[in-house]
Amino acid sequence: MTHLSTGRPAPDETLPGDLLEQWRLSDASYLGGSRSRTWRVRRGSSAFAVKWLSANVRSDWRYEARVMAALRAANWPAPVLTEEPIVRGDGVWRLFAWLPGDPAPVEDDAAKEYARGRLLAEFHAASSSLGVAGQRDGFALPRETISDPLLDQWLTVHERRLPEEGRILRAYREAAAAQLADHESDVPSGVIHGDFTRWNLLFDGGALSGILDFEACHNNDLVADFALAWRGDHDEVIRGYDSVRPLSETEWRLVWPTYWAWLFLGVKEMLAEHYSQPGGASNPADLEWQVRHLLKDSDLLRARCGGKQVAGA
Image (cartoon, rainbow, N blue to C red; front, side, top):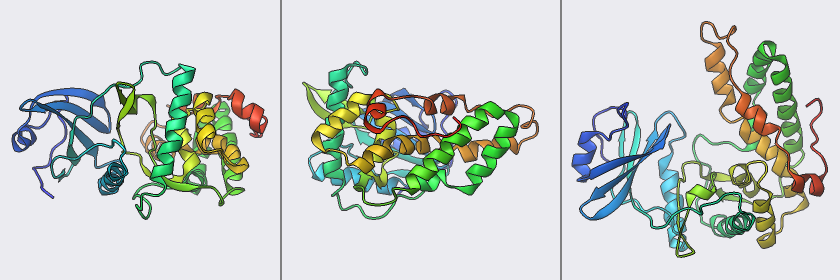
């Protein structure tokens, strides 16, 4: 492991000069991100991707590297590290070979969404037997996240400021906690990707050529991978998945509460930081995004499992 001087990405999103020099890179182009950032760069005639993962987020990059290496050994096109990662005070910098291909262009195409669900089931068939033992540092199961008493404490604080929004948040938290507690075992588990979205899947000539962004990969119930792959309303993803690996009755009933639990990730920290600051009480925290996604409905789940079981929502 190598180390460079401590520093953070510059406000204009340029790469640190010492990193460019050490890895002999040029033509850096910033592609986006927030706590995790990505650049396209060149070394000679070859393209690479530089990825920065903040020290303030779940940064167990060694677990991530083990998962990607195991997937490549199983003939899945996971990213390839081309240099020893550089670790310093702001996080970790990694250099990956540039993977060919482009994402599927239209997300709401039913056939493509169905195909993405089938691909996720095939991915799980491989990832659940990778031999990557243990849990990734900083990650918890949905039932652990949603049952955290500190989350309940800070939701109570928020509810005093915004009673209607707080009521909805509390109703879904309690429903998720109760439903997940009823099904704590007997569902398939393994390594999940954590962000199996359209833009993280590359295709070249119609064939899968790359799977990107393993920052959220960890060990969980496989159904937890629907949190961002399904996003609350992409029902064709679940239909496609079920056509390859039929979901058990328990798994069908876990989709909704698992999705709700994932929407509370980071909420405890957000509320604690906000309401601990001067003026926080007079300026309520903004959880509109979480509420909007909690209220999403699914024709498939409604038909398959009945209506949402959320008292008081």
